[in-house]
Length: 150
Image 1 (cartoon, rainbow, N blue to C red):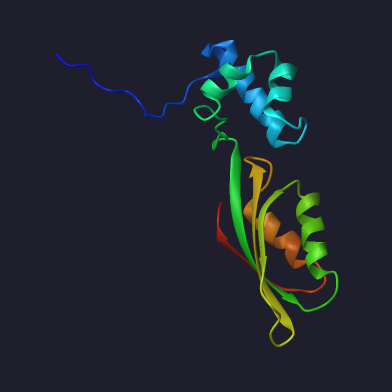
Image 2: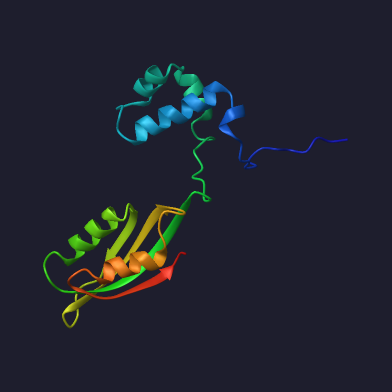
């Protein structure tokens, strides 16, 4: 009987059962991505692993953001072409404790510009309707629509 090849399959595994080396590689990758270290060698020294171990695993392991804890919402807004309106939207989203993922603003036409914004927030902390209501109250906002999300 021939053995089945397992290479390339993706699985989700709790960090509770992962070998320490895998967790350290994840830490090194995070440090490097955030600019806390300037090189892979420096990241390896910081977490206490060899560079060979790092290079063995670095392209095979990454952190999976738990979708059960986070929600993503996409908004479509019509904003007046006035100074500071988009900044007020960004400030409003910050005050709602939302992490902005994307912002796309079109060139204003007829005194208004359309903007799409995608944000992430922790489930259970905020309802999409509350976001729409809060942003609608900002001076210069003509319309807010939820185009995806909860």
